[in-house]
Length: 104
Length: 104
Image 1 (tube, chains in turn orange, brown):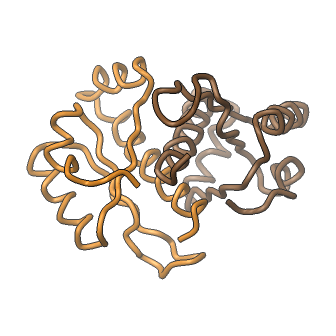
Image 2: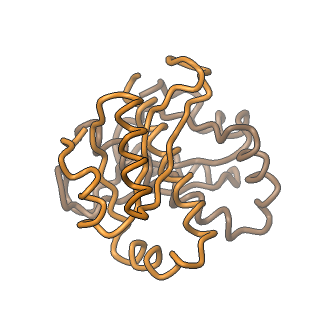
């Protein structure tokens, strides 16, 4: 994928996850705190689709909110390709899932 | 900026613009249609901060919703740097502002 395509996939993950969170009353306080303190977003590099699915499973086990992006396949990559896993939560907790990944 | 930093800036623009739109009752229908048809996002390449501000001015004149990202300057670039302009609207209308830009 080109840089713009990657950026669009990351935006899909951010928006998809955010939409789930604003509809979850249990997350109102944490989401508000995140917004108040600058909406930190960190983009890390996963290995492949299997890896992202494994990380999502691990996140779910730890009750971390996640959102997996499957691309519609209109440009550059096949339909249904898993491109990005979005995770939201307290940094130390999220790091138990993604802390060993390098920056993209 | 590295690819991950660029992707995070694009995500800031998407989310910032989306948050404005969900609080605008006049945009409910158009936003719903966009979500229903796959939330198309296209990432284009601007020239510099002055260029993005000019494009935003033009968008405002055409009543196109926009969101300008100013980075907090914690990593890679100076505080207050303008990095991304997000635009939302019917494709032909948005193209009157950004249609001549190339894909990033």
